[in-house]
Image (cartoon, rainbow, N blue to C red):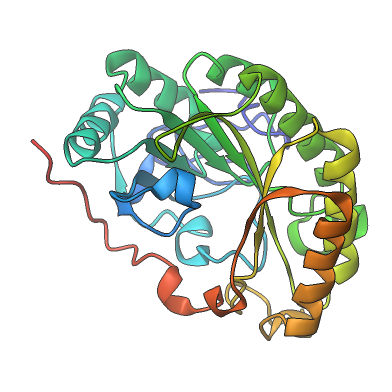
Length: 294
């Protein structure tokens, strides 16, 4: 596609089948690093059988600390056509997945929508993203997505600039999440599994409690009452963080307690990870695996 404007960077890049000239460097065909049942999401997403997660390589945001840096900063994986992606969705569904979750798929949104036109799963679809979204792209996706699982990473522009070269992230991501909340019209959870709705994730970063407190306050004041928030303690040093020594450790109990105390004082509902979740085994093995379902 010429003149790509799928993400808020609006770089207008020319994209070939496998490579592009834009910020993400990706082509039009999705590159998949892993497609498998995944148990380490929120309980209403993973359930007892697992979420059918499809991890896409590349990223239009590019956080230096990305927990999936091995694939977000490269095109490690296998390129598939929309037909191939549709087949992967079918096999994940047949494997018993509670949902089909597209992880960091914004830069492949066109191909994902093509695949969903070819095969619409009988289980919910989940858009698992960094929150840095173009409203026009979300509007196009709205007919295909049941559950939105965005991050709200940064509330302070200087932090967003420092770690993702995206000082507009706080305002852009907030508008995106507001759109998602308006599109779903509330959460629907049946038999412990979310069928429709929004969960906003926030990853607590070491040395950045001020950013986390600001993010929770923004969520509390700007999103609908009762919006579910998933506060994550799983940060493990990874990615391209050599220039950021404050990111070279895990968060402390004191830092996490300050964030949780803020959430409690604001009456925020949702999910809170245990501090022990900061472990490398929670990062998937991007082994190019695919489902075996018939």
